[in-house]
Image 1 (cartoon, helix red, strand yellow):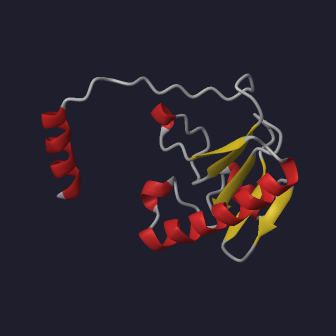
Image 2 (cartoon, rainbow, N blue to C red):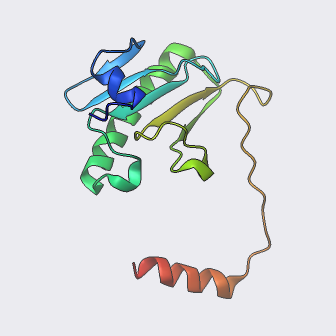
Length: 137
């Protein structure tokens, strides 16, 4: 447990949370901000800054729980779609530095979540080199 981590305090029971799932290793609870109704966070109980600090097996276990909880949220809220997001580091929007995955039900294009991808013309040589660099790491 990290003493100044709000999610560690939730795991320890020091701060209340609206829990929707819990087992020995993971916890899921409603985000207090509720960007959209049903906005849920899934966290590992063991503190890790973000997914980059977790092992591949821990990450696989986390996403197994994310899948289960997403189906529960979908069944309860009946959205038109869902976003699954994990922000890693401040530049990517991470504000609590304990691994967490957002489950965000989507009800309309006008809800409070905005994600814009800007398409660029492909540079196939650059893409080939980048793919090679990534696969070699």
